[in-house]
Image 1: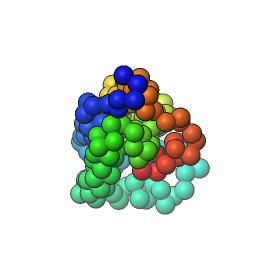
Image 2 (image 1 turned 135 degrees about the horizontal axis):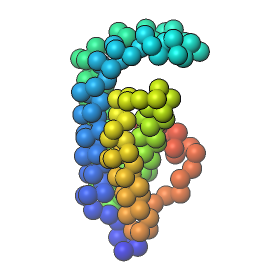
Image 3 (image 1 turned 120 degrees about the vertical axis):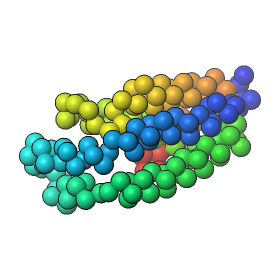
Image 4 (image 1 turned 90 degrees about the vertical axis):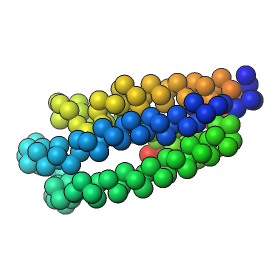
Length: 157
């Protein structure tokens, strides 16, 4: 399979996995923040007050808009991946960032010792998809070496 690229399940799958994950976040983040920020503020006093104020005031519509913008970015990355047979650096960076995003959700849940938005689909969807897709890219011979710069770019995206 080396050099042939990969199919739509690997490339468009990024968008599909992202949708599943972000549906969880859309359904839970606004109410979870309203309910938990007061306690988190007490448990983590080292976090700047501005972060807590921003978290408390984010409404569902504002959060949904941010998710929509991110959806456009992920959709563009998936399309770039599909058009390039998985070779696109943008697609691969987005895939890496998606996996690292899932790890961050799991770390957040560990830090608060409980549920956080995104922590259910991270181990069930985000990480398995990312590992599977990276394996398919590797098998096809198109996976670029993971560098810290690429990981940072993926997380930024």
